[in-house]
Amino acid sequence: MERALAEARAAGARGEVPVGAVVTDAEGQVLAAAGNEVEARRDPSAHAEILALRAAAERLGRKWLPGCTLTVTLEPCPMCAQAASLFRVARVAFGAYDPKSGGVDHGARVFRATSCHHAPEVTGGHREAECAALLQDFFARLRG
Image 1 (cartoon, rainbow, N blue to C red):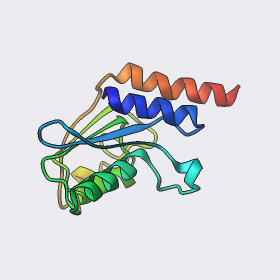
Image 2: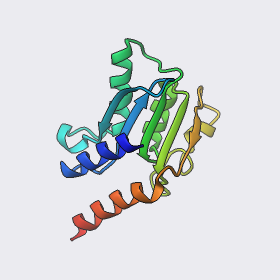
Image 3: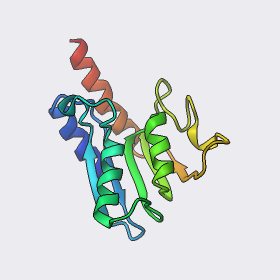
Image 4: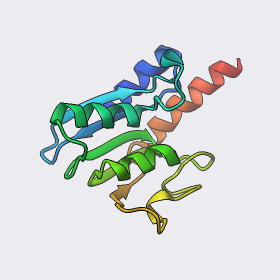
């Protein structure tokens, strides 16, 4: 989670919503890490999770990431939860819960849907207060 937090802080410093994600292999080695790049790329799908998952798959030279863990500072939205399923990660670990836009424990609950072909093991609340504070501070500054 420390690396994901560093990616989130860097994203926030660039004016992006401060969310960071890391993909690690079964041994815990970092395969890829990213922060949000929605504004920089002018791409609403450039969430940290999507970028990290794509980079990890590219690094390994395959489309699926069995045995891997996606660690992210915020509960993945439905798009990112579905991507984690499609990449077939073994685990998703996230920090802050997202009652408004989350797709794992809130909202669409993607992994519980009958249409979900692969549901990873999920744990939430990792360093929750720290992850939530990054987002709260970012949005407080925006509101001025």
